[in-house]
Amino acid sequence: MAKPKKTPRPKAETPKGFRDYFGAEVTQRTEMLRTIAGVYHRYGFEALESSAVETVEALGKFLPDVDRPNEGVFAWQESEDDGAGDWMALRYDLTAPLARVYAQHRNDLPTPYRRYAMGPVWRNEKPGPGRYRQFYQCDADTVGSASMAADAEICAMLSDTLETVGIPRGDYVVRVNNRKVLNGVLETMGLVDEGQRDAVLRTIDKFDKVGADGVRELLGKGRLDASGAFIDGVGLSDDQAGPVLAFLTSKGVDAAATVANLRAAVGASQIGVQGIDELDQIGDLLAAGGYGPDRIVIDPSVVRGLGYYTGPVYEAELTFEIFDEKGRKRQFGSVSGGGRYDDLVKRFTGQEVPATGVSIGVDRLLAALREKGRIQAVEHGPVVVTVMDRDRMADYQAMVAELRNAGIRAEVYLGNPKNFGNQLKYADKRNSPVAVIQGGDEKTKDVVQIKDLILGAQIAANATLEEWKERPSQYEVARSDLVAKVREILAEQAG
Image (cartoon, rainbow, N blue to C red; front, side, top):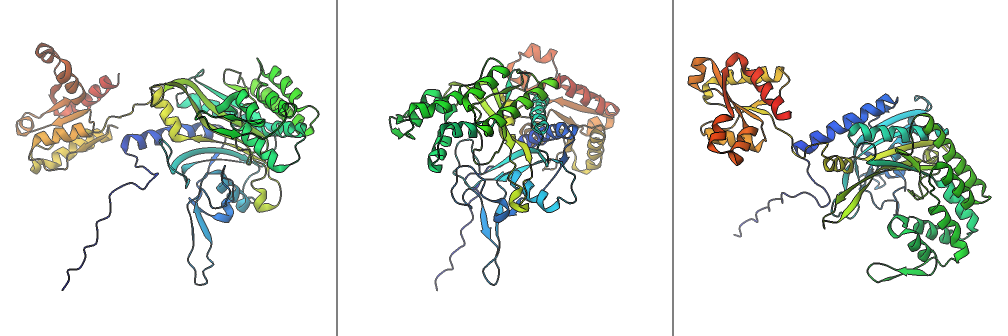
């Protein structure tokens, strides 16, 4: 009789394109989201938490650079007897669900509706270095207002948010443009063929990578890329390409000069002039609020979501330099973007509902804060109360309760207390700042031993025997002074 085959054990590995987040990272993200929420709340925005799952029909086809409705999302069909169940998908951003929520509950919501949302989103895309299929977004949107004051407010709030979380002024810039200006440029060019217009838009989107000369070549016959491969161009004449290059290079010494250059680029195009007037309004409103060019600028090179946004677009870029994986200096780059999308709710209601909003890439902003030294890559763990006598667990629980009631993060060691060395190894692995020790002798004298683990590690690594004697890292104090001494050590470590 053949032996039954054993069921193979499952592999303990993270699915491709996903990752696990441990203590310090989760704590840092939570704290940063709390800080951002405080800014949004101060601006009058209300929290919204919508479902992570939407119908594919409700999500719609709004992911950039995809041709099929379900491409780029994690989708499945509900099982029903007739086989015609709804197609469901994990949300790929926080804006598409907002459009569904507003359309569904608009009679119960105020107009304008100002909401913020924070949470994970999922993209079924090819993963790469630093590119995951699940990541966090942090959005704020105003639905139901066509006023440029709504867009100016979003830009001001984005600036305030970056400074509040720890990006100093001078290390970032919020750049603003308007999709209508670009439409005016296309109108001035006289392009009728839809395919040619799309090709021009795709070329414009490469401006930050190839520069003005590269765009000129790609609008014309084509260019050689860095690998030596030839990329076919759109086939425009120099005269046809002129308005595009004038648009992309129209940033002047100040907002007034930029606006003047843009007016020349769009000529008599009505939609282009409307876009420039909107930029003018945004600039005036920001100036009135004290947001100068050291924080927010009009910049025609900002080209975002060409098939998505309908008016103003904005992007927050961090301007300080970092070193990439090859040791080369480069700017940190964009951490946030958004704009006006007046057509999104219309899909549900049949009526145009103006909307504008911004999304912050949480993981990138956290990485930026680490680069600036604003948050530690590793945070301290809890104070560990060690166990010298398992029959005295009640005494140790009383100690940890006192520490917690004083606002100090603490825990009792819950492993096997037989080997005391293992308890200290555990404290080291937890990155604990302090260990509390009370054996039988200490209990008799009503004292505790308090070990400064951070100082102890520094002394062990660097100090001479004489320095070690002069700088003890373990203190004997009265049991009644436990909380005061631990608090004193933690303050010294933080100082």
